[in-house]
Length: 271
Image (cartoon, rainbow, N blue to C red; front, side, top):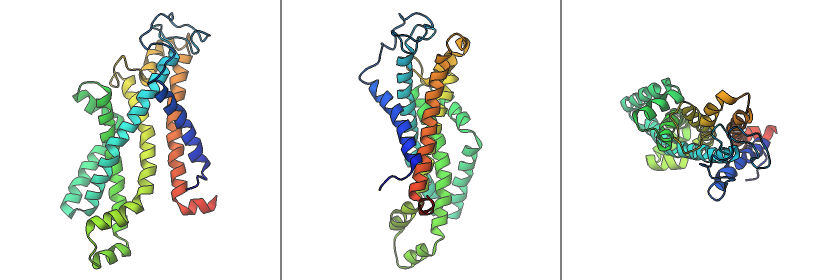
């Protein structure tokens, strides 16, 4: 399918920069992440393009490693919430009234907690680690996606062609795979793209609070926290991770908008 959405192209370009930065860390970084011989709070220069942090570590190296954590957190959260959310949502949409009501209550309870608060509760109950943060964010994502899926499934099941399919003897698995999922996947794809950006933001927030990826893992959120005390003497230590985090979130939102434009024929005709 030909891409005609400027938003999708721009979003892919922004996210591609972050992903490329993350992949590069598996093969090369300007300095060893644990190298503290650069001097404290050195300004940007030939030796350190973005300067050093308060421990003498190269800021560019830390930013690149932070990109890896952000990408892993985004993909990991979507990998957890992507299959789990639609599965629960489809189950709720097809289930008997009592089971649907029970699942709806559980989802409402989960959604009553902000994503960050729910993630904090899960991480606090386990040992602080990147895996725990991803699991916590993924569970929060799954609740959002499940609620949306449930609504979409019920909307599709109310259509006349579903009644005709059931009258003709079509089984529920074939109805789900042949009618329900093809009709709801564009909306789910848009939502998952948005959730990927929010997952990166949630991971940075957890790391800022000391509940994310522990050292020696680099995280943009922890970099922001560590640079608070030196923001006037080394503003790049705050501006750089903040800008990259904003780039990733904006890119994910643009991708979501582009997917919506590509999937919605009315939007394509209006362009």
